[in-house]
Image (cartoon, rainbow, N blue to C red; front, top):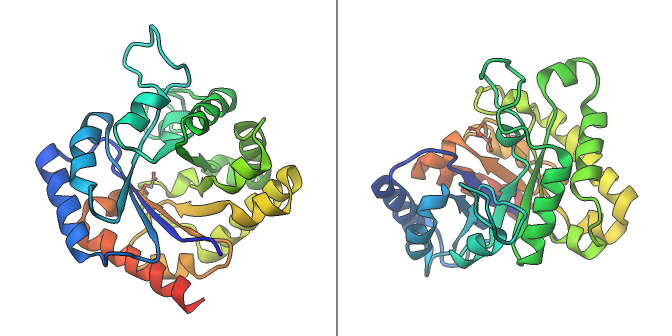
Length: 267
Ligand code: PGA
């Protein structure tokens, strides 16, 4: 049985005081041992203070990025070990806002321009330090409209996870985040999410076999709200959610957690 995971991606939001407040009000609502894993992913510079804030709560902490080299002249970057030493257990990798940035000059243009091979190196670096990658994949609207959803996802999964051992893949988290649903208020329908999740699990099965496919957790991300979380979670291939905007509000994030737990506890 895969333990559900509800992850909050804060992106470049909140100040330190509101981040502390968010974590403490969330912790106050949570039972001591929730049946779902709960993760928050603050900006780098809040990781140390947030490690204190989540200490002795069921909330775990992830970073939003890392650099694959262990050290050196990489201005502005942090290594996997630096991330782990802050107290992180997870790290988001390959988020579409790092692969490309929506709403810059070209709506599907590239700012950070991370490609599959860089993301693959980051995945290896994270695993080398014992961090769990939350590895993001997803198609743009243009790709979906051209009927390329499955091909894009296959390419991202195969290239991004290249060289991993099946047992490493079994312990991974993959987040399906259709780019057109991120921050747009436009959510994938439960059927669209189910179709993509099924496809991702099939690709993992083909590449890494049954144990990897059965173990890997696949989250849905893209405009998840308390209202739509339950219907999205209501599918055997959806193991949790990666939440952006709604994770910045303790009430909303908690409501999403409750929805996930209730769906999965019902079985
Ligand atoms: P959103 O972001 O929930 O604000 O759409 C999700 C994400 O980018 O992980």
